[in-house]
Amino acid sequence: MGLADRQYHQGPPQQRMRMPQQPSRLAGCPVTKWLLISNIAIYYLDLLFFGGGQSGWGSLTAWGHFSVDLGVHHYQVWRFLTFQFLHGGGWHLFGNMLGLFFFGTFAERWWGSKKFSVFYLASGVAGALLYVILFYVGWFGTGAIPGTDIPLSHRPLVGASAGIFAILVCIAIIAPNLKVLLFFVIPMSMRTFAIAALVFASLMILTDANGNAGGEAGHLGGAILGFIFMKYPHLLSFADKLGAGGKKRRRTVDAKIVRERKLRPRTHINLDDTEVDRILDKVSREGIQSLTDEEREILTRSVNRE
Image (tube, rainbow, N blue to C red; front, side):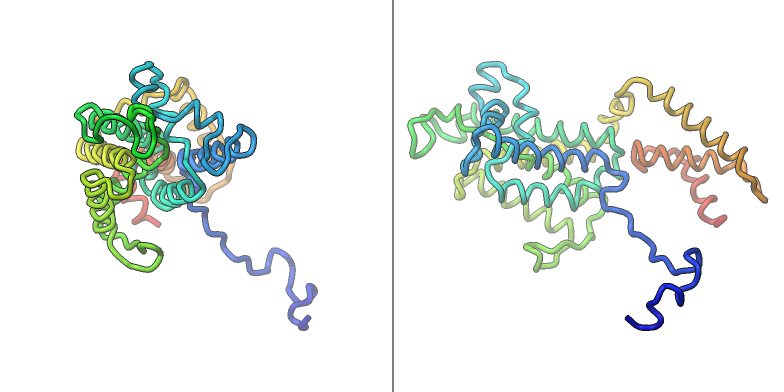
C-alpha cells in the first residue's frame, strides 16, 4: 500500500473525491424491468419446478402457449397474452431479452410507462392475430405439422418477439440513425437494422426456409401494429387513464413538493420550479410527445436558466 493510499492521507470523508454513479439503463423504466424479470422468472420456474426439460414444455408452457386450436377453437383467449411470456429454449429467451433490454428502455421513455405497456402487449396480440389470419387463408398449408401427425391448428406459438419487433419499429422511427452492432460486429443504423429484420421475417413467411413461418408471422404482425401506433399515437391516449387513484396520488406528490420547498431555506425562490417538476413527472409517466407547446416552452426556459 502506498503512502497516499493510507486513510489518514486522504483527508476527511467529506473532502474525498467521489466518483459519480451512472444511472442504470432501467432507471425510470419500470415496465421494461418487470417484463425482463417476469419473462426470465417464468422460463426458469417452468424449467425447474413445472416439469420443463430441454424442450421447454413444462406445465406453464402447456397452459399459456398459443395455438389456433386452443386460442380460437376452444376460446381460451388468455393465450393471446400469456404466450408472450413463454419461450422455447434458453437461446430464444436470451435473444428476446437482449432486444428488450437494449431497446425497450428507449420506447418506454418515449411513450411513458402506461402507453408502453399497452403498446407492447397489444403488438404481441397482433402477432398472434396475423398468425391466425394466415392460418385460415391456408398460408401454412393443410394437414399436419411436417414430420408429425399433429394437426397444424395445434402448432404452438411462444415468445416475446412480436412486442420486441414493435419496439424495433418504434426506435427506427424516433431514432433512425442510432447505431447498432449486428451480431455485435457489423455496424448499421437502427433504420437499416429494422428493415433488415422485417425483410428477413417476410422472406421466412414466404418460403418457410427456417421452419418457423408461424413465428415470423407473429414478428411481422407485431411490427405492423407498432407502426400503426407510431403513425397514430392518439390510439393509445386512453392508456393514461388506466389505474385508479392517479389524480389523488398526483395531488399528494404535489403537496409533498410544496411542503418540502417551504421547509427548505433558499436564497432564491422561483415559482416555475414546481411546474417544472410536474412536467418532468409527466414526461416520465406519459412520454415526451405528450407535452403541450406551453409545457415545452417552460422546460426550455428552465434549461436556459441553469
